[in-house]
Length: 351
Image 1 (cartoon, rainbow, N blue to C red):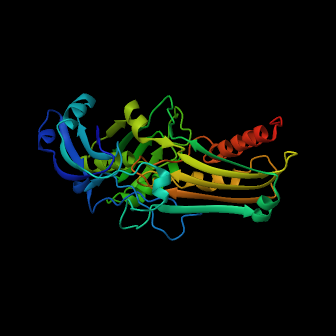
Image 2 (image 1 turned 90 degrees about the vertical axis):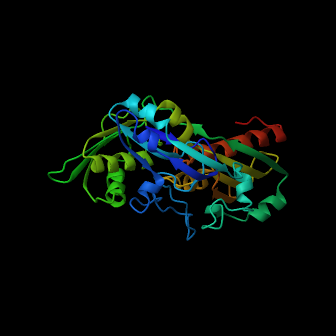
Image 3 (image 1 turned 45 degrees about the vertical axis):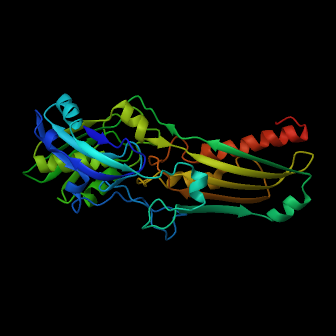
């Protein structure tokens, strides 16, 4: 069972696991401090637009600070699921709340960095363009402007994530059965992150829906694998629907759009400034949708002049990542909405 942060942003001032450790059936309790120096943070896969700016890698378990509601803080391993549920409630954590940053537009203004060691909230910048945008806006009959939101959502597959890990002491092989879209990625990351450096085999059975949110390497996969080796026994974790709803999000884009149009409906030029709410930390594929959004924003339209930019910013929200189109739908919303508004402005049929 996983203990998750109830705070969006707070210092962990104290944590006690003694009551949980002595509870019936409990085998072990793991916390961020107990894993410190043993398991490194989960790093992101480098993508276009990340440049040289460091990105906030996701701690397997929170150490001295939590940065979003639902962030894993402790893990209790017990003989039965319900003993684990009972014991995880006995872990006591004291929090000192900090100022929260939840508005991506505010984050993009970069007034106060969420991660001081990085020094900025704008951790990605992707852009694309073509033609003479300034001229297009100068000769246009109308300039149509609007702002749109592509809100966060939850993937809600029929089957939440599930993991079983088993370590064989005789040959050192760690076998992990996990509900994932990226078995080889999980294998690669576990091989790098686990201090025991096992020979890793990953098995992906039938997956009851992934939709892009099972394309990351998650903290629970690392902890379950680590625990199986340390305890010398198979360890199983099944994500609860409430856990999935809290900590597994997609989308989260805003877009400010300007279209330069002629009275006959021709689109001469387009400016779009998008901001992607990436959450407090990166998972392996958090950066993926941004490049797709920038490249696909023209949609099916022949637009001769375009100036497109997307900023990826950190907030006190759960990490995001690919979800069904991975940036394509985030691009379709602003272009299709601005086309409809342009049609209304010009008194034309949108088609």
